[in-house]
Structures are given as structure tokens and as C-alpha cells.
Image 1 (spheres, rainbow, N blue to C red):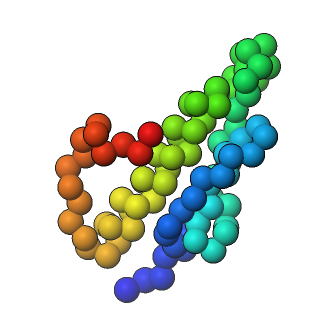
Image 2: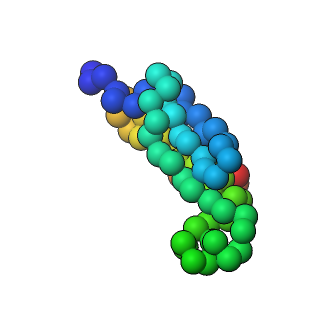
Length: 85
């Protein structure tokens, strides 16, 4: 069995203008930036805080799905009720 490069569990931490997704070792996997200022958001094409949160949380679910695939655990069919949002 291969060692995972980004071991679960993953976490999403909110920061002043972004969410950071980290693996179990604290390695930063993704930064999801947002802005609550409508003018800045439209000029820089940033997401709202809620949109950024959804992407960060869904990346956590994606990491769990990839972990199951690597060890051969059968996955359940995806259904909207399984979302972590």
C-alpha cells in the first residue's frame, strides 16, 4: 500500500480573507479566497465568504472519497443529502 501524500483527516480553517485546507500533518493543501466587499469582489472576481466555505468544505469530502478509492473501500453513490455544507 502506498503512503498518502496528504493524509486525512483534512480540515478547513477560516482566516480573515480566505479558508485554508490542511491535511493531518498541517500541510496546506488549498487556499480559497473570498471578500465581503462587493466592489472588491467584482473587480478581483472573488467569491463571497459562503461560496468559499462551500468549496473548502467540499474539498474535505473530495479528500475522503479519494482516500476510500486508494484503499479499495467501496463508495456509496453520491446523493445531495451527503454534502457536508
